[in-house]
Amino acid sequence: MTAARPPMGWNSWNTFGEKIDEELILQIADRMVDEGYREAGYQYLIIDDCWALKERDEHGLLVPDPKKFPHGMKAVADYVHGKGLKFGMYSCAGVMTCAGYPSSYDHEFSDAAQFAEWGVDYLKYDFCHFPENADCQNRYHRMSMALKATGRDILFAACNWGKEESWTWMRSIGAHTYRSTGDIFDNFRSFMGIFTSQLEHLCQSGPYCFNDMDMLTVGMYNRGNVAIGKTCTDGEYRIQFSLWCLSGTPLIIGADIREMKPEMKELLLNTDLIRINQDEECRPPCLLGKRSVAVPETDRENAVEPIRMVKDKLYTLLKHLSHQEFVIAFYNLFEEEQEMNCIFADAGLPYESGYGFHMRDIFTGEDLGVKRDYFLARVPGHDCKLYFCRLEKC
Ligand code: GAL
Image (cartoon, rainbow, N blue to C red; front, top):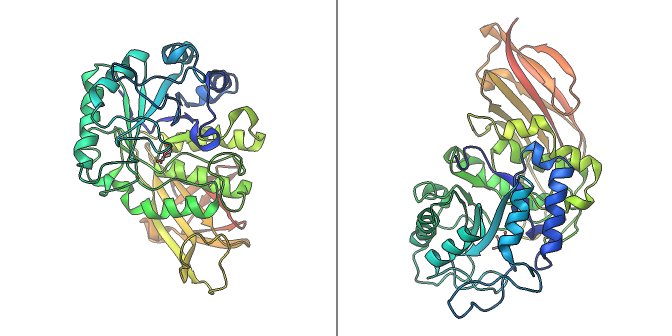
């Protein structure tokens, strides 16, 4: 069934924006298979905005730009399906897409039929140029119905950037995923802002309708379409990917997988982290502790919004997995290494219970044995540490 787990795949927007064509999509399809991404679970290959001609045809249908897609979309879909992948496309609930291409307002049912005919398995549905007096919830409901009316199993990836508190109604109108924030940018401040804004909403995310914190920028290193601010370090990308995994949000790669740094490929294909994202119980992490510090007004590095005087710098999270397993995760947002402490009583496991956690480091694989009462981790600056934990009598 569609979206029983967070969907995984690749999307053209973050790196390529308007510069997309058939050759690129076919090459990405090949790489998704040859480099092991499909095998790891990344199954959707999604073409974002800018694939169409600026005008509909005489029958009111969307037309793939023949310069970019000379063999049409069905041919692309067939190739993608032939690789054992699923095919995703993009439209918008407004009167134009964000980049100024025709979109599906008042064309919902005919466009959905067209997508189904091409063999589309996933539709990202954006929110630009949405008429002021139109009813947002009803329009998303309408496209959801239009997709169902095709009889094809199409994942409905709603993208209204969290407007009208999308986490409170998107499940009810049949969306399988819903974007809950504005666009991600390829910098630390951007993705931490997205995560912290969504942490308290993640309880409303689960099977068949997942909160989508936007596409990954892991491995982009400021190449592409969403480059603003300081280039991320490997540690920062570890933070992003593991937070997306703990949050059970869709894992949609945005970097060019033809030119991926080996360490980042290893991160994106980390089977332990993917297992956490895809865990059958789909529980969000709970916040065990955070430490905040006052920031002097001079700390304006990367400031793209008014300065906040308090910053949250250390996060300790715990996630329940299925089969009596847990993850404890430490996030250090200071520049310098920090010692971080997790008191197990804060996670419902006091000393007097007679139980401790048998811990394994997820990145190094090191077995740490059983810890009782608390655990201290040394976490490098702008980096994270994650541990699988099992209850053990001690
Ligand atoms: C934005 C959307 C992005 C991308 C872009 C295309 O509204 O959030 O993810 O799809 O439009 O123009």
